[in-house]
Length: 113
Length: 114
Image (cartoon, rainbow over the protein chains, first blue to last red):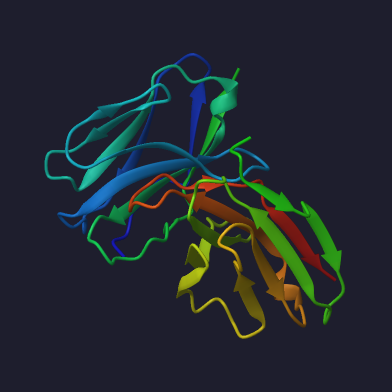
């Protein structure tokens, strides 16, 4: 499985934007970039995913570098409820490939009031 | 609440005992996954089912671990002869039938082996 690299931790202030980086220099052409987050004492939850183009949804935006070797999850206005561990995960779309999610250690985001 | 439920939420057992966890996925989801998460680490894949068929198992799933999904609905994960190293959060997730579908996770079962 292609590997991702994320900072161990980041801090933000409430109502400010947060940019969470992820490096995936060995990404293959069929890998989608997924982000999940895990709030304290909960299971992970899906945030967003993309392949080549930038993506937006109600939770966040995903900016993907042109060479696809890195991406950034953007929370436009952090709230205290966004404090969580954020995981950047590559998923291969090739049929017959593994279905599993491969989690790293993720980035622990602290949001200060 | 994602719609995936797990029971029990917490389990304390003594080393050598057997434990069984249950996962009820979202009803229309035919894929079900088990993951294990230890403190400070991301979840690690254990196994997954498509309907009642177990299609992939991790090397982490030693012969003391067995998972079933007998009618393609709920699933159980049993650990026999528990060891202290089995202490972890056991997470269940489900997804619809197509690849790359979002996995919806339950709240997990936290196991402590004394």
